[in-house]
Image (cartoon, helix red, strand yellow):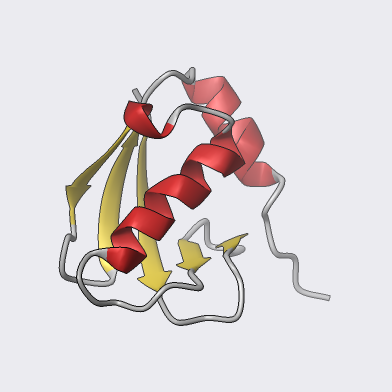
Length: 92
């Protein structure tokens, strides 16, 4: 199962995933970083992005830090990378 390494930025205006040119992933969240709200928001948003059940996602590390690892179950590596590519940010 693919593992997503990302940097979470809570308390944003909206939920947004960005894949930078260097392939780093940043997820902006519209939930505050308190009482697990940002982590819950992150898992819900990623379930929506990848089209999988929230129960197939597992936060492996980073429960209290911005740098997180999330196991994305229910997807092949090819499907995982295809979804991520839709969020690639290109410099213009």
